[in-house]
Length: 104
Image (cartoon, rainbow, N blue to C red):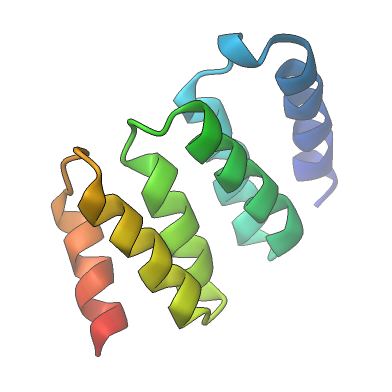
């Protein structure tokens, strides 16, 4: 959608000019909007940036897992799950449910 494209451009500018000022919710917002319109390329970019800039956040893992879950990439999903298990990040109920569904 055009709106998501404009927001992607704004987030890109913010990321390039002041990535330290970008909050987790900014990455999550543009990631989920990109995923909603099935712009997987953009979703990959923002989920990887979130993981690089905020590796201590659960969403650094869950955004990538959600992306791989929705696009049917099981191997990548389980790679990220393995990374999450090795981290000190606490897993919530929603993430556990996603893991359970993917195991089926």
